[in-house]
Image (cartoon, rainbow, N blue to C red):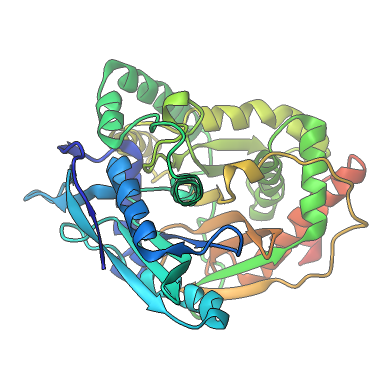
Length: 450
């Protein structure tokens, strides 16, 4: 089955800044790991709010594709190997159908989502969105979709899911998109865009001249199998405590967690200054509030270690630095590459922290909710997920949710940051934040816990 759309604006453009950052990351990760950048969502329709007739859902997908240029933009590569994109005004988006019995619908939806996301998107021939429908007796019980990361980031994927659900429930879209992909590219190429990029790169260059050239410079042991391990710790205690600390200090829960990671990681690695690059959603302006596109880029957050300072004191000092890192996370990716080469040449060493922080929760779940901290860290075990043999970052700390509860995860190169250190760091973050919710405590000494 296909969702036919027609009547949209057409155009050809270079990749936007965020798209170019993702393009580079995918190339570095390699073809075998490119599918890890796919972004999937599952929309269940509970009784009373669905299911919906098949034709209505297909028409809704067509309307959504027509509404957002990024969902109908195909990426190509020119003769020099440079990527560009073409936005199509009409076309037909393939839709996968999975018919099943009512009691099988939930499991079939999970399998279908995994299947749609199993392979990377092919430049040139494939649309940047894959949709699948779980059908029971002719009615759609679940919609699943996978988006190419060149077309959308996590924020945009949540927006697509929310708009499709509202369209089916209410019969229309509330407001027009705040901006479109081609408009974004035009803005970035304007004088305003250049000014924003230059200000951001000045912030980056200042930081790159004083941070450690690499956060994980040394191979400290043999690799695990596979080399990059992925662990996750789900914690009710941390969820309650981080909300309390964030509310107390008037910061986001992400800022609390990023600061806690920085406080512990620097001393553990022997660095006086810790450098972390948060992945920033860049949705602070009205023009980008409901834009479907990839706007995420790296920010640069640095923290000088003070072993005597409690987390509360560190948050007072780090809040403005965190805000600067978020504010300066929009820049011309090619100009950023040139800045890195220039600073690396001046320092006579390649400067790149390879240490990132990524909050993938929906934006509405990142604000602090009033709560009472629990009685301390819960005894949950670290769950190990399937690892990969190659990745484009030595260390990636992730904030997410598992089964409705806050979870922190870590993907790391085990040659440089072994599994035991991964566990120690995640448990250290939990302990530090939970303790800070009760009292101002000094950071735990992770070296003593190893």
